[in-house]
Image (cartoon, rainbow, N blue to C red; front, side, top):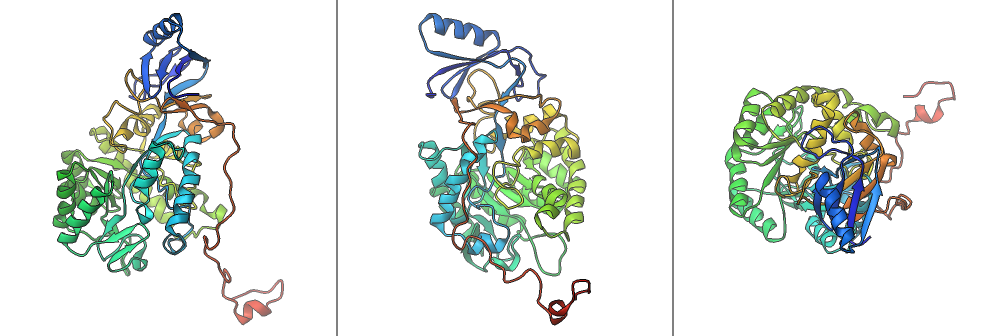
Length: 456
C-alpha cells in the first residue's frame, strides 16, 4: 500500500491514547502519515473522497480495537541481544553490529511498536540507523537516538569492564568538566537526539549502584545540551541519583529506583519524566531460571520493583509523565517479544488502570521521540498515522498487546506493515557469542564421581 493511500478503519472501538474512555463504533480516516478525521468527520471525509473519485481502502474492523502504535522509550537496538557485558563489549564489530540492528529493527513493527528511543548505542550507530529508517533504506519504526552514554571513570553497570578513559561499547568515559561539555557538543554535532548520562554505577564492596556524578558535573552536561536544544536523560538506580538528576535539569530519568520523598519532590518540581523500565528486572525474576540465568539477584530485582512502584504511582498522581520502556536488546529481553510487558507491570505493580498504562506507552512517548505531545501516540485529527488494530480489548487487559497474534493490522506512518511474513530468523555470526570451555570446574572429585555420588 502506498503511503498516500486513503484508509478508512470502519466500525472499531477506538482508544485515542489520551486516557479517554474507549469510543465504540468509531471510524478513523488517514492518508499518508496524517490522520484526517475521527468519528463522524472520518465517515464524512471518506464519503467526500469517494465522491471525488479518490482511491479509498476501507477495512471493516468491527469488534476490534483501534489504538495508537506503542512507543518504546528504552530500547537498545544496536546491542544485538548479548547474554553478558563480555559479549556486548568484546564480541561486536561496528559493521556486524549495524547489520544486526538493521535485521532486528523490523521486528519492533511486527510487535506493534511504531516509535522507539535508543538512548545509548554501541559505536555511535544509532543516528545512522535512524537516518536509514527515515530514508527508507531500512524498515523500522520512528526512531530517536542518543550516542555513547557519558560515564565518569567510576563506570556504570559493567564495573571494571569500563575503561578509565576513552570509549568501549556504549560507554564514553569523561574525566572532567571540560570533557563533559566538549563531548556533549560533539554528540549533538554528529546527530544525537538525546544525551545520556550514567549517573549510577556498580562499584566493588558496595551494594546496589552508587552515584558517580556530582550535581555540578550533571549541570555541565544539561546546560550545554539545553543550550543546543537537546534534551538529556539519565540512568538512575538510587534515590539520591534521581534527586540529583532532577535538580540538574535532566528531562527523562530512567529507572528512578528506590525513589524517596526528596527525590519525588525534585522530580515534580523540575517537571522531569520517568521511565522505570521494570521489564528487564521482571523477566529475570520471573523467567530467568527457564533460560539458565543466574538466580542470585532474583530477590534483589523483585525488591527493586516493589520498592520503586509505590513512588511511581505517587509521581503519576502528582502529574509526572511516566513512559514505558522495555530495555529490549539483551538475551532476557529479545526484540519483538517484550515491548508491551511494561504496560502489564504498570498495571500489576504500579496500580495504573489499563487505559492509564496505554497512555504511558502512547501519548507520553512523544517526549522520547522529541515530538510535540499530541502529534504522535494519539488518534486525533492532524496526528501521525501510527495505528494498531487489535483483535482483543486492551482497555480491559493490556497483556493482549504482548501477543502478536492479536495484531490484525499495524500501520506505521500510514503504511501497512506486512504481518504475514515469517518471523525473521538467523544463525549466529562467527565470534558473536561467548564460548565457554565448561560451565563448572572439572575437579577430580567431579570427574571421578559415580552416577549416584556427590560432586564437589
